[in-house]
Image 1 (cartoon, rainbow, N blue to C red):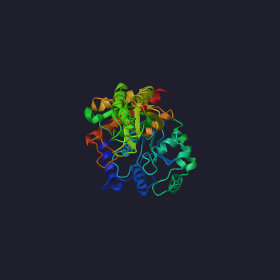
Image 2 (spheres, rainbow, N blue to C red; image 1 turned 45 degrees about the vertical axis):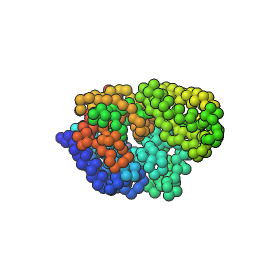
Image 3 (cartoon, helix red, strand yellow; image 1 turned 90 degrees about the vertical axis):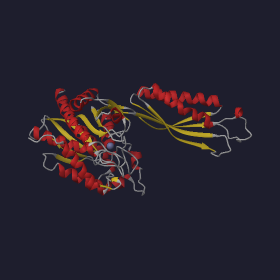
Image 4 (cartoon, helix red, strand yellow; image 1 turned 30 degrees about the horizontal axis):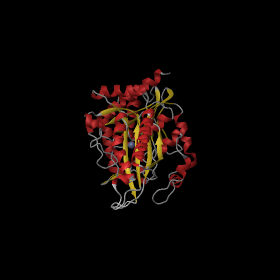
Length: 415
Ligand SMILES: [Zn+2]
């Protein structure tokens, strides 16, 4: 009986890297020839397995191992990458899923107790059209069709036209939603892409969910005045009020528990060395796993900005740029993920995900979901230096396979 072989996963990831990468990193940008070549390799790798394989209306590829029950255990990943990307982001999940299909097919003689499906999501990264989670958001039903219809790449090619090139009818992409019909659980393995597990010296962690995000522009409006003739006590200095926000957001984030706040941009008008700042615009990005705490962080930032505006005799205006709700994962699956990790490497750790993942879309569609993270060296991703120790890659395939088996039993029990 063939058993799980995590070393084979690493070898296949290296083969993929050789086929679809260059000296600058991975080049599997969605809807390109290189992406199609990567998907061809994936189909070759599963050729000997008793799978039904098809692309859905949004271009996601589904590999189905039919089981005794039509209830489905889903395992997801994305083989697309950003330009000059790393060798693990997205494709680790897919090839780990292939290894699990091999193990289950052998162990259950081609027919596991529940149906097991691996999905390779189309265009998770959004590298070409600036909109991530394309295939999974079409499938979850969250994709904003009007917005997506107007998206164009740097050459001015519209998303619907690029999709037609690869055989996808844009107007029908949401028909992919029917793929979730019998979905009973969704699992996704991913590199952490941050430094938390590295700093804890732990290989693996269970993911609690993806952060909700509130993104705003805050504009303070004062009065331009000559830098020489205007006494300090007569100024309406928009920059002074905006600058007070910087230490304030550290306090707000600290009070929130594990939320994060970032002022990422600052611009001033008139923006010359001899004038008090009339207008200062900053951006504020706030993230938290708990929607009530996210709302509190936002309210605290608003009231602080109003206080600083009053103190400085300037006005303040808020404009929402973007928001998304937190997507907490399933408590029982998180516990199973902890168990799988403990059985494999001794100690687990629970952490939220800062980046969004396809798993967030599946969770929002009501499918019980969990992710497992494996440590990232340097805490870096979307870069050719992205890396994870091979011993950790082996551990993550082993632990993720254990999680898949536990999730399958969990689905059976719920019958
Ligand atoms: Zn990814």
